[in-house]
Image (tube, rainbow over all chains, first blue to last red; front, side, top):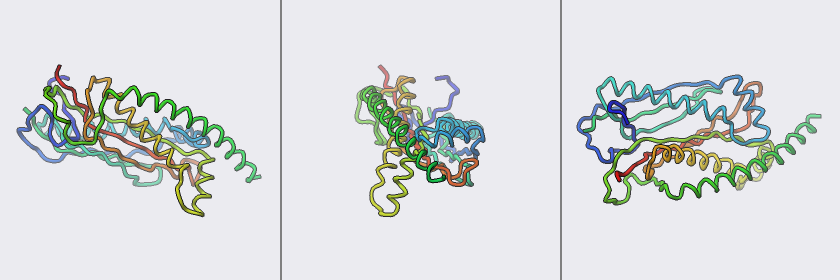
Length: 109
Length: 152
């Protein structure tokens, strides 16, 4: 791992490291709507059931984007790690989902 | 006519769905065996270990799973009488286990020794795909945890 890479964990502390400074909560969110092409495939897939790969990827991309936004916010504060990360998903409208991620920005030594 | 279409959909759903489920379960069990060497726990701290921790990093995995027409049909009958909806239970179970395996795969690629503080989240994303008012239910399982590697 590079020197300026952000350490992310969902534990309260970082194993093997000490937290020297705390900056408070940082968060990132993104609202994604389902996409027509993917939706069409999904509705075909719905007949036989099973995994909807298009949606799996869509939600994973959304989650990565939300995480990147959170990291950018933490970086602005001068943090080099984010601890106690939690993810949550809520559907805000028909066919759209909000991915929300939050955690505490800290500096570890 | 509509009844005929429904009957065809249910039949396709039954054969294709149960075949897909069987192969999926076989592959889940197969891969779970391969991960017995990567302990995964929802404890906040790893058990006592004399080795020093080299790094700890977030890992995650997700899977979206949909029900088939046969399951939907069985479930709608179930809705009248109440009781266990085993048709849906297996879909949710598959989504969670698949997501867990993906997370473990990610951790193994990075060379982790164990995963701690596992969290599992489930979100329903079904209902109303394009062109149909009542889309079939589908759920997303999202699993995340902290991968830990010891110095050797």
